[in-house]
Image 1 (cartoon, one colour):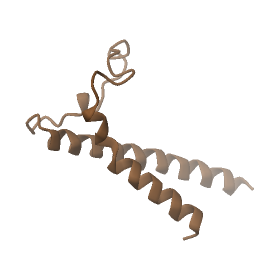
Image 2 (cartoon, rainbow, N blue to C red; image 1 turned 90 degrees about the vertical axis):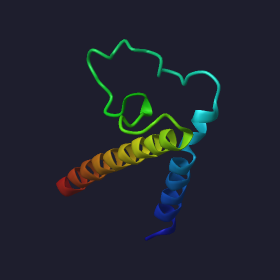
Image 3 (cartoon, rainbow, N blue to C red; image 1 turned 90 degrees about the horizontal axis):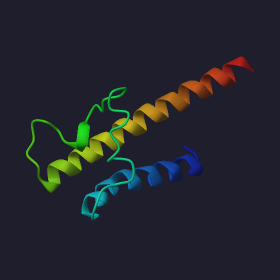
Length: 90
């Protein structure tokens, strides 16, 4: 693995680890209060809450980490597929 990829993965891992810091902020995050698209799209993990767990900081943190990991895997997978499609044409 080259140094650039390794450094990018380290930065990505650090960003995933610090995701729950937003739980300590006062107020709401930008855009999370807008329900205008709720009839079009329903969130897989609404309000970052796992339905079977109680509302505690640890459980909310786990839901944030789960959301972050799912987002990274889906985004990364899509980028890899697009990259392979572009490079296979050449």
